[in-house]
Length: 230
Image (cartoon, rainbow, N blue to C red; front, side, top):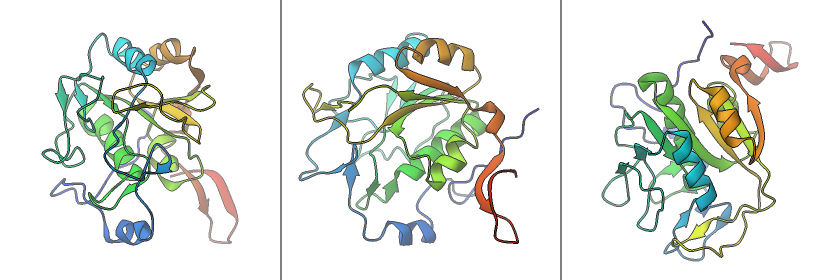
């Protein structure tokens, strides 16, 4: 059986998944960003393009059980949706069979969230609840959260072909394209089905052989180990 590393977002006792002191320090000075850009107003709600919502819904057999970061303009139409300010998707239960996540990209100081926390919850839901999870996020392979929660736990990823993925703005087409590459990440058991479902959208990579590994860690002599057993 392949080893999956422990996934702890914060305290395993309270499971509130708030920011740790270190993460609070890391986020100081960063601006709130969504879809890779600083917003002039927080009144704009960014949503997943319809073609990807349809692909996710089809992959999950026709319905999505949970959307933990929904908004009033969302076209995901999950069975359960968490929306601010009443429900904080990072603090509510993720014990659902199928979960789709298109989180704010970057750090939201007001609500104390970051893309790292969303990826952590994705990995935790897969490991703890055996949930099937898909997440549409910016490609950031050099970051610690990708190394830990994507390469370390996720089972597959689709690097999307879109030159500039255009998100819905307040439920409508016409938004500016994202200034970075995006990927659909999968935490789940049916990698072959994921390949068949998403290969038309991008390059699909099987990550299972990387699970349980550490990336970019340093040995005692100071030499960089690009890939090592945990």
